[in-house]
Length: 143
Image (tube, rainbow, N blue to C red; front, side, top):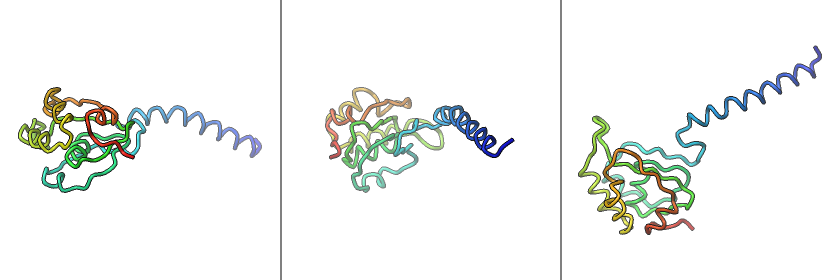
């Protein structure tokens, strides 16, 4: 076999492999390719409220949302936000007092009302919203 033929065969193999592996990798990506991607994590409310406002774009989940809501951060309209109640890292159970405090510290009054009325602040199941949805509820839009 010629060197050119071997290089050509390897190139075709790599291209075919890319078409097979890329969709599988995308399915495993919890942010579905959106960047930046903040999947949340543990926090204390005192730490959170002392943070400066920031720009929220891409995927913003859990702690990311709460931190943005209590610091009056701005949202890009196409951001994807997933909200759920604060939970104990040890037990996985709802921390109702933490939810109440976070809602009361949320800067946009219409968003506060939404979080209470919809139950999004108290559910363990995710509530999915866009940055535009939040902007419509009075959070700042990024400029």
